[in-house]
Image 1 (cartoon, rainbow, N blue to C red):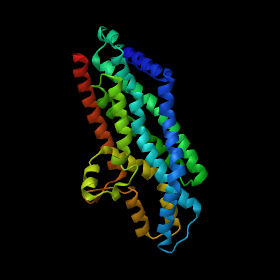
Image 2 (cartoon, rainbow, N blue to C red):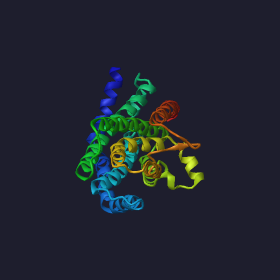
Image 3 (cartoon, rainbow, N blue to C red):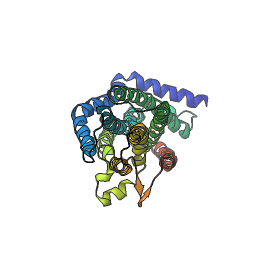
Image 4 (cartoon, helix red, strand yellow):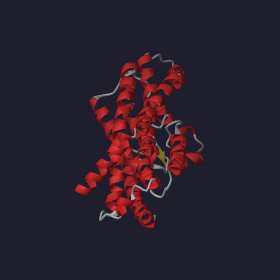
Amino acid sequence: MKTLHALTMRNIRMYFKDRGMFLTSLITPLILLVLCSTFLKNIFDQTFADAFTSIGMQVSQDLINGCSGGQMVSSLLSVSCVTVVFCCNLLMVQDRANLSDRDLKISPVSSGTIALSYFLAAFISSWLICLCAEMFCLIYLYFTGWYMTAMDVVLVTADVTLLVVFGTALSSLCSAPLKTQGQASALGTIISAGYGFICGAYMPISQFTKGIRDVVTLLPGTYGTSLIRNRIMHGVFLEMENLNVPEAMITGLKDSIDVNLYFNSSAVSTTSMTMIVVVAIVILLAAYMVVWHVTYQNV
């Protein structure tokens, strides 16, 4: 345990010592928040306002802001929890590219301990950054349209932590075989560009064709996005119920922005979503340990 702790702390210090890597990871979620609130908020506002107008209801701007803000913030957090980890995990590839791992190979430290130290360091570093991103997102919601309770905030934090673990397991598995920083950067670019679409963050999967929707619902990241969206927008939909918005209208809104997810026409509960992500983490982590051991022996 002492060796694992020492290696983990070494990796964390190396990550935060590289200010370029750290600042890039930290600023990216903030840039996304600014861009979304600047260029997409009006579109989301108009979409929700038109939905209420279609049934002859006028609601406050705060409620509209809560709807649009909740959708944007949940999308940003669900993507950041995965993409940020790929930046944090660059250290694993850098050590291999710079031959810094040779000292570890000639030491009596097991390959499993080394692999776990990279995993824990990436998780802790990413978790701290994502907590900062969550804080800024909650501040944004507070000043635009706040409908969350203290329990909602706790649950969002728990889901962010769960998604960071998932992102760390996925990133570790993908990065384990890589040998150069160019390969790691290319992988990070691909994930950053595509993950938001396949997890339903940038575009709700309800808008996909049936074939694509069936494929996307097999991916655990989709359920992670829906989990965070459920927590953040829970109070918004309670307020709609208090305003006597028709239940069919509320259900339609939930379906349209993936608060409600369906698998084979059956609704997926938040408990089931959590279990799906947990099972995915276990599988990815086990695969990572195997791939790392094979790669470590052959490099």
